[in-house]
Image (tube, rainbow, N blue to C red; front, side, top):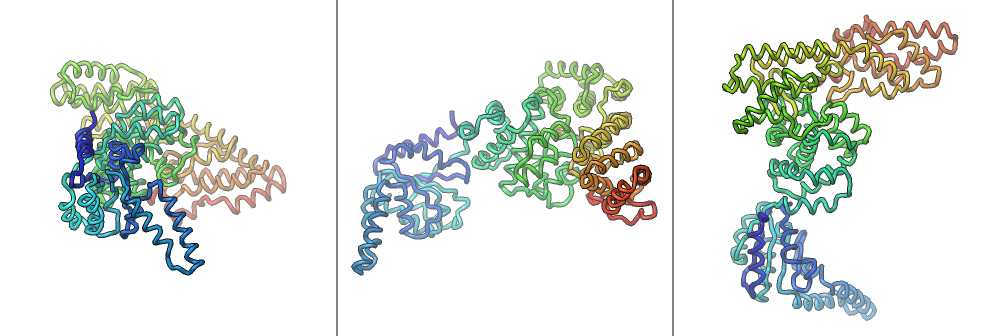
Length: 611
């Protein structure tokens, strides 16, 4: 059963009347689907001899009104041709505007032959005053005794009060049409090309409907456009990523919610770089300029609007998707892989079930407690974000008396388990030394679109997990530096990206690491790039490395390393000969921008510091 079945019945009853003596008004917001709904109910497209549709958009006078009404008439082409012929005849015999007279006569004849049901759409978009446009329509109701259906969004009428006053003399009944997602969505998909995107959206209609309901704007046209764009985006996602059902759900929710909010100008693209700010988004505090962004975050539960860390829709996607309007499939795949969210998982994993434990029955809660205990205290293959959600749920269950264990004892058991997992190498390391896979701003924890403010016990658990991940990163540095040197040797462009600035800080842009690279090996690879004609790429890479540096002391080790690399390259060039020495000197003079110890303190702040 459709939500508009009653409205459909009311229109059907009106169409069955003979000479009703009043017009039927359909009032609904823009994009609610009223035009499509009424055209379908009245069978406009296949019943042209009995129903005529006319849009009054831009109609400014009686002539334009008449021609809008006759636009779909089969005789319009004939009238145009005869008008042209009459004008040609009049020019020869100097008889005045014979073409207009001919056309007026033919149009009057066509008006008299109009069908018994007329539909006038876009009344609020006509530039005629309400009194005039309703007066023209009233002729068909009062004098010609036709059935007339009017379509309008009265809330957006530029002359709302005069329109509402005048309509009382013409309109006998007003019907509200509601946005019917269930009827509209399958029709949207009919126009989407076959592919992974269409298949996913077809199978996950409930996700799209929930996002649409959360948006609360009722504009099916906006939804249609966002759905089509989303399907195109999903076509570019590697097939195996769809096995991460929960992450893919958040990805789609986030895309649709941001896309529609931008289309409605609820937010601007300039605000998107602040999605990762806990002050602006997560906490509800800060500059009022970002109030709508905060509201978007609060409204769309299950979406990753707040994207500090642990997001399935990182901020590095914002510019290519919402500003540029496109993304390279290879870049998209690399970004999704880097989130660590798109490993195979169910759409409703254990941690997400646990977040909503208060909505469960008693037997379900008992089963949940068993599953939490197994994951937290027995499993070795864990992910930090889900683990922390489950630990928090365990503490909350204890707080409300659902667990008999002492709170301090429970906390200590969890802390001990994290230490055990860490000592066994089962805690995933922090990427780039900073990316934990979950978010923390002060005591505000977030992962997977769900957040909470940590109490003292939970904060201890968070801190131990964070320490374990950072120590895991530090232990993996030899392997990381080896990969960086190998990438530098094989493809400068590839390693260049690892040091470039992105909103998510998902690179070594703000992380000192060069000082851990072997000086001699780095210098040898650099000289080999010069030898083989890669001077331009090498130059850009040197500049990128030095651009990361500010004047703060955290870069001191890298600056010392850079000085040693320069000295080693000069030594190698001198051993090779004059050509190598001259080429290196030219390259260094243009591209070597690392600060010397005496220059420290004179540099401009980096992007990271400005942020």
